[in-house]
Each structure stands twice: as C-alpha cells, then as structure tokens.
Image 1 (spheres, rainbow, N blue to C red):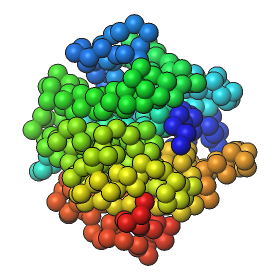
Image 2 (image 1 turned 90 degrees about the vertical axis):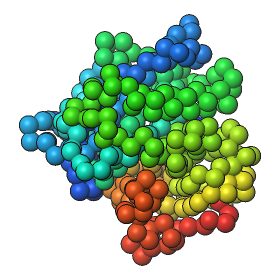
Image 3 (image 1 turned 60 degrees about the horizontal axis):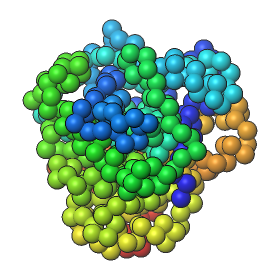
Length: 378
C-alpha cells in the first residue's frame, strides 16, 4: 500500500478564491477550535537532521455553545496555504480560501458530564488540516478531538513563531531511522505525549473555557487514516489508557499484528482493497481477541477518507476527470456522513457506554447500503 499521501487533497480546488466552506456538521453541537504547540523535551527527534526535542502542532476541536461572537477558522494558515499553492501550481490564494465549520477560540461548552477524548493521526505525509471536516464533525457529537501533525512526516508544519518544518516528500516510513517500526513507534509516542499533555494545566488553560475536570482522560480513543490508522491500533497495545481504536484503510505494523489486542478495534476499508489484499489485516484479526469490526465502504479509494472527497461534489467541474476518478464513485458528502456516523457509533459504544451507538455496528444497515461487514475475513 502506498503510504505517503498528497498533503493538499483537501485544498486543490474551490468554486472561487473568495471562500469555500467545508461541509456542515452533523452533530447537535457547534464546534470551537484552537491550535497548540506541544514540546516533548524528554524525547529526542531522531527524524530531525540534528537531534532535538519533539515539537508537535495539534488542532483541538470541541463542542461550543458560544459561537455568535467568533469567526470560522481557516482550514490552514496563510503560510501553509501559500506553500501548497506553490508546490502544486494552484492559483494564488486558492488554498487560503477554505474555511472550516469550527469557530476559532470559541470557549468549550459547559456540560454536566466530562468529555471523552479522541486523538486523530493523519496518513503518512498528509497534514492534520487534510481531515478538518471529519474531526470537527466528530467533535460536534460531544467529543474533545485532537488532530496531530507528526514532524518530518507531515509535509509542512508551521509553528506559532513562524518557523516551518518540511518533510522529504520522496521518503516512506521504511526510509527513516529504525525503518517502518521506528516511524510507527515515533507516532505512537506522539499520541501518548499528546494525551499526557491533557494533564498539564499549562496546556489545558490554552483551550478556551476548558477546565481540567471536564476531560475524561480514562475514556480515550484513537483513530487515523493509512499510517495514522496503524499508529491508532498499535497505541492501544502500548498504552492501556486508550480504550479503543479505528484504522481507516491502513496496513498494520508493529507487535499488534502478531500479538493482537483485547481492546475494541475497527477497520474501515476502501473498496480497492479486497479481502486478503492487505496481509496484516487477517494476521491481526487472528490474534485480536476483543470486540472487532471490519467494514468496507463500496465505491471508495484510499484517498476517499481525506476531506477532498467531501468537497468534490461542489468543485468537481474544476477538477480533471482523471483526478476525480482517483477518489472513487461515492459522493464526497456521503463519504463524510458514513465516516462520521460509524466512527461516532464506535466511540459512543466504548466511550459513552453505548448511549450513541444504536445498532449501526451490528451489521449491514439499510441507511448505509454502501457499507458491508465481514467480521470473519478482512
């Protein structure tokens, strides 16, 4: 499976440079967002040219009830947008014209119950901003969602002081120090550090209106796309704080493949990966002895899980037919609906005691005929 993903798939086209909104949220809550820099001084970054502390950028999404006095956050910063425009020969200002459905710096909604935590890891080479529509939609269902960029893996990362870190776009995980296992465990350690940071009041105070007691650090799930999906399953093996994990169309690596896990796991597969085509899936399935679900979304490709699929319906005429075909035949908004519905059903079952899961995970559902389950032969 190709692991490095085109980083700007969510930003390739828009109806005009005057602005484009990502799809509307499906949950009951409006969403706020803030970006944070998290530095792990205890860990040297072996991917860097010179060893240095691991310096992460994350985007935090959460329910808010105070959106009136706040503006929608851009999908990415001007510097990142300019980089993408130049790298891919896009019209100047095009990438910057995209806006999310999350209100920048709006305060966290006050709730009677603390919020469960969901961490998201992008595909290798992709940006956290390439999944803004998905993660903000999950947050609209009542979760604190944190999307993580992985330095020297994400194609470009911009920090609050204006620094940028670029990845070598020709490299794959097996090219890094320690090979693919080294790349995987670096990501796993990133996810663990992000979760650790939620116990640091210096960090949590940077999330507007968030009180430490309103985070359920014992109710945590990870999900991710491609190599991010591999990290989301492996981190459950390494850290018991992670109750469950979802892998979106990613091959699996690490000890979890041969040793399995007793934690709930779900694989969302694209239709370009028929049964048996990803060797690590059946190997993991054989050793996983907890709750497990394997679902396939028909009409999809590996790239369908990125935000770009969610805006193709509106911008399709501006995209060459051969490029559009690389995202399958499923409608983009429909794909986002399916991703979010099944993800939040899974999170609801294991992070909210089943209050939000319904019967969606029990098997084929007439509401989503594109989805088929095969829990015996992934």
